[in-house]
Image 1 (tube, rainbow, N blue to C red):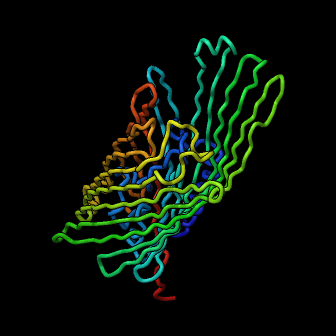
Image 2: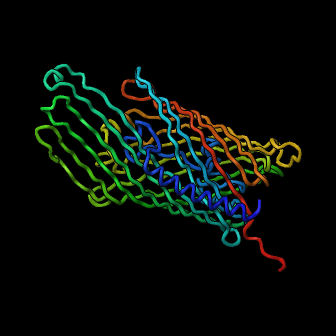
Image 3: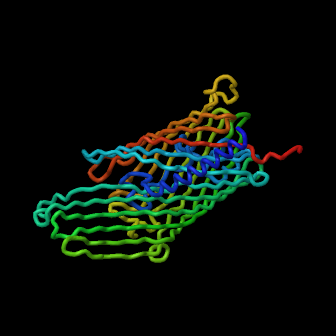
Length: 436
């Protein structure tokens, strides 16, 4: 692939992704009742490559793909290459609560990232990706016969949408041949809107609308380390660890309550809180650890563990974040495993021997409790990367089968089949000219 063609492809990708992120901010990036709490439904981490392996990456080093999960991994690259990754994500859910069933389909922008070398074993990466999404909508009719007998039919409905994005800049350096360290700055920004209606069919009663609009910003730092230990002539053991600081949120939280009817309309309550001053809310920090075992050029297996404590982040009781008293913050944990195999990267006859095939699995404990009960997610991922032109450029396709929650009177079971598609572009941009 010529540099001119790749430059055009990168420019087109940037324009397309920026346009898509703008459109994504105007529509629900997810649809799930579990996004009613806090900052919404946290996005799955990493690129399409990470997703096809269950979301692993803390202890993984790979010079063919960008790894967003550990800033130390930015140094796993060709020292002369410019690398770009962007991906899309389709979220398809089926819900069940008791005998009630429904479904939803949404489309997400997953990431846009670019990486380039700096100087002798150092490299840098910049990018943007969704951090969380809010999207829900439901309604029901009151069934208490005494209440209905006095007031007539009453309908309650709720809706919400919005997204929080994370822009990041990371840099890493190699120390010797086996150790790499890295640091990352994250900037969070977004808007979340939630509305709740109580509607009386009898015009002599006023209906009530409660609403909140949160506009937030914040920043955090992430630090990472990776170490590689050769085991014989072919195997390599990789170890990694990360630490992300908590992010104190700024911005505003606007809360309101309106009463409307034939008799009169009135503003019952309106208040704007300054986040960080009137209401102190933060995003939780995170600890991560991972390991990998690689047969150079053929297969790799990896395991990740992450933990973040949301219990002291101020979400409970803060207007705009606590939309339902049934939810409360807790400690989130995730266990992830992944496996990749490439039959024969050097085969010059059969294309499919160059394809990277992947399998992964994960089990997550969400950052909230529902009526004191744990909400967990479990899934299996499958995927592959089709090499293009020089085997470094690639098209990644993946699928994620999973379930969150369980069927009960108060909990909703989500079964989902999510698809991801990613594009990783690679080109030598920094080759020194040997002659004029």
